[in-house]
Length: 104
Image 1: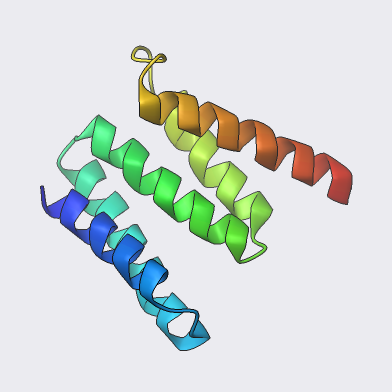
Image 2: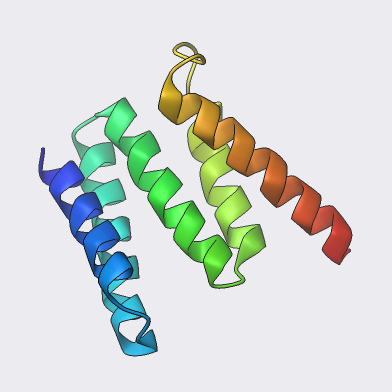
């Protein structure tokens, strides 16, 4: 649950501010959530953390970084493709792919 606590903290900070200085803290929360989930082998929390981080990176204009992160995490799954988080990941990956193609 530590991973989810870090992810939720990042989401709450993000919702509460538009201050660029706080964005550093938000990003750190998401990266920490991802690291904890990976270290503990908690696949669903790895995906949730990666989704939050990828959405944040996309909002910061870091589309390629968001795509790489999320596609690497998504590729690690072999089941559960109909879950809410997996559908959200697929949708975000499709959007990021389209945005990268437009930028090229």
